[in-house]
Amino acid sequence: MSEQRSKADNVNWQGFSTKAVHAGYEPDPLTGAVNVPIYASSTFAQDGVGGMRNGFEYARTGNPTRRPLEANLAALESGSYGRAFSSGMAATDCLLRSVLRPGDHLVIPDDAYGGTFRLIDKVFTQWGIEYTPAPVSDVDAVRAAMRPNTKLVWVETPTNPLLNIGDIELLAEVAHEGNAKIVVDNTFASPYLQQPLQLGADVALHSTTKYIGGHSDVVGGALVCNDEELDHAFAFLQNGSGGVPGPFDAFLTLRGIKTLALRMERHSDNAEKVVELLDGHPAVASVIYPGLVSHPSHKIAAKQMRRFGGMISVRLKGGKAAALDLCSRTEIFTLAESLGGVESLIEFPGAMTHASTAGSALEVPDDLVRLSVGIEDASDLVGDIEQALS
Ligand code: PLP
Image (cartoon, rainbow, N blue to C red; front, side):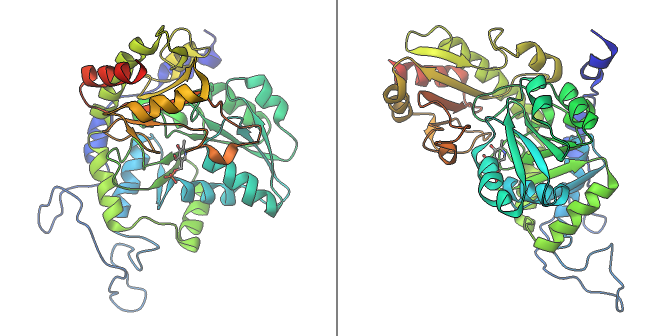
């Protein structure tokens, strides 16, 4: 392996769980509370005009429950600056408006999350932004999609829902050669499995609604970076347009983070068992899971991820009817959008999470079912899929 490709070998995974439990917060000096209190206050008393206590002025600008969350998120992604948002899409919107100006161009995955695609395609194009879809698994195609006015390369890896893998290190080189920034939507992997900033990305983005929150009880988003100027731009818009999480949301997200490492191990264990059942099952045309040696980018996934996570996509021999049938027959896997929670979910991307891609270059196959494998007992999950396929 050339020196260029050694970054992934040098990713420092040390201390992740300790950071998850402790980073950003020490027991409250006043009470000793070991958890961050929910500071339900929209405004903060000043000691004379401009005399803010610890920088708190108004809760859109900063809140004492959100601040430890932001410090914790930065630590998890091995970054210097973290910003929390009211949703993953609010984080996406903040990033796009911070980096792009009318006349700029960005490259997006040709199977990007439907909401990301919709925002760019339906809203940002109206403000003079151009985009080109390219497969993240093909570095040359991404390079070919770059233009002189390309300011951003958007990467998801694994992608939602086709679980394509992009080589973050190489894609970062391509983006930087063209003087563009690179953001990695790290939602599917979580920072426990993948560390984009250590691999050369400029920004790690999350829908914290998913693995980071982990319990399907809160919607949120995050941006983490190492560049002070960029972080200032994020902070300006975060305050300027106000897509911030409330203190209860920040508390729930912090509480979820404490068990992120444990959950990701269990999600990965369980997903491997479900993949074993699906791989070679007579009703299944193909199983898409980056941990499978048959996955076209398995080697890249193995290089940059420490395990392969809890998301599986499966294409059925019986086409759309079989896919819809599977979605209606599971008993433990709940038919619902979203992913990354402790409970297993099943969905039909073509008509649910990715309905907005219909008719576009990003349209997903209609025989595709997506599974978010939870932390229940593996034998129950395997049994559920087995009976639903039978
Ligand atoms: N990025 C990915 C990969 C997602 O799957 C999602 C939501 O499903 C988002 C971003 C948007 O996040 P949110 O739903 O928290 O706005």
